[in-house]
Length: 189
Image: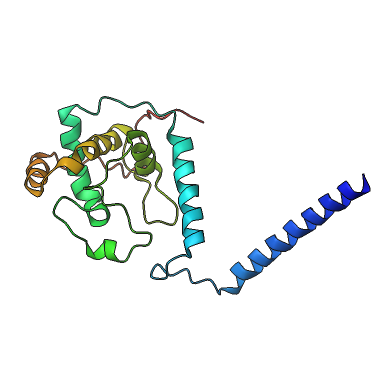
């Protein structure tokens, strides 16, 4: 019994010491937080796991509307062109001035298919310390779903098809600057 208590005490003391060292390191300012100084591979992998698992957990119960609705896709094209291409690019774009300075580099959504639930949750809530804003503060859920619907079509588009659909899209007039938001399709947790 005494050995078990000593083991727990030693483990607890070790955790406290490690936490104190981590806090001292953070407080020292030695860690370079600059976006032009990449994380170590271990740190990068750890943060990637945290992000992916968090999104998976929070998005799993989201109900997906009909993403094949042409009017939803068209509206999403305008939203994407107005708010997303600077970071996530469009067909035919190689890079942007804004994207070049971001770390981690945002995914090129004109090349990568996305899970609708994860895309909705990320667009609505954003991702801390990544430059991905929480568009749910200014856009209602159906506008966010329009972006998700458009993202389902984007990777298969040519630059000409992209320009054509954006030219036909309604303007981005759904900004809710009053701070009031429309209803939600996301289940509470």
